Length: 188
Image (cartoon, rainbow, N blue to C red):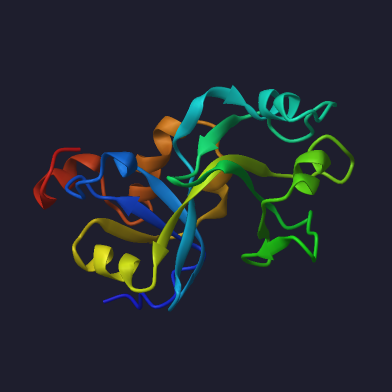
């Protein structure tokens, strides 16, 4: 069995029988995980019809968005009034960014939103409202209850624009198709 003590940098794929409609067919990128809990961003659920440029306009940031103007994501049910930018590590603010890997960081302060319209913009970025969080031991229990499948995090999937395909693509990384999952307690 895979070591589940540190899932930072991995994807969690919601399995059909998990029992929480908020996470149905979700792919969550785990940004941090330790004995105190875990934090991740759902990378395949839009937050309505709003684009990054729309959100920046709403918060008073003017200028042309220098990353792909993609749908704002519904990152999860925690801190739903706060934005989180998951981005390439070419943008990094030592005081506000969390380095996830050599190539990826997470920033949740206004400076990254402002940077999205300047030369300092990261090459790649997705913007999420809210995040997914678990207390100490909670995620590990959910995994043991077969609510989630763990997959190595291929960062290119985070930035793909077709949200509808991300769940099945994440499954394909381990040779699973959605129709195979109907055997695990639900329908795909």
